[in-house]
Amino acid sequence: MGSSAPQYPIALKAVPGSHSLDHVRNAVASLGDAAGPWPQPGDWVPVDVLFPQTLILLAGQGSPAVASGRDSKPSAVAGGVWVREQITVHGPMRIGEAFEVSGEIVRSYSRKGRLYSVSCSTTRNAAGERLVTNRTTGLVRYRPDPAIADAEQGLAETELGEIAADWDAAAGNPCASALRSARVSSAVRAETVRVSSSFWRRTCARSRWLRMFTPASAAIRNNRRRSFLSRFSRAPCT
Image (cartoon, rainbow, N blue to C red; front, side):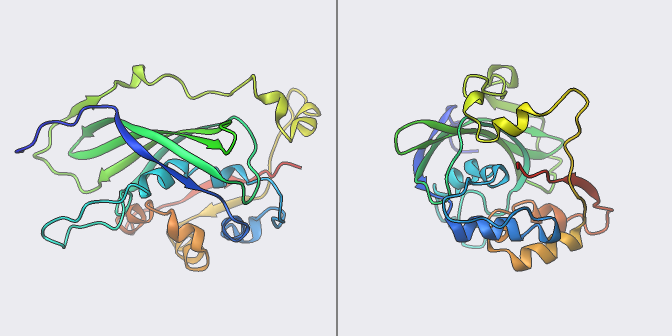
């Protein structure tokens, strides 16, 4: 291919940020009638807003222009598909609280002509305290290329370690009192929302937050002829 293979892990420059009140409210509004309590200044950032922390890191890297111009991307995540997210929340984050995301690309692989990339990130507050760790798998190339053989580069899946609960930090969970009231066989549930391609088109149209972090929209466009239905429940912590 005319260039040496990259050496993994690939370090990424740290990216500062914060989740503003407007940003969080847009995320909550994207759920429509299934949205939880309306966020107020000083509230905790909802956990689902923390899922794209690695995407914030990757988007902050930029992307060098491609000579043809036609294939250039505005960021490292443009045109990709968000495939899998593994997340551990180590501590709560306030709306508007400053943070810094750091991390690295640890693995890439190809399966059935499609290219994937795995990145890990850690989000810390201004005091250096760890708030969130994420492991993100992205589909870099959606359309399969028969010429691409199955292959792997970087760390193996077994070398990445397990993304699991942080039991040492669990005692500081702001929802601890509600969790302690739970009993064996207790069910945590909320309104069930049916998700379809038309649902995502409607919600993306009204939410700036989803327009920022919807690489999966590429998959929706490429699957219009398929049935794209699933279910999820939102159970806010009260």
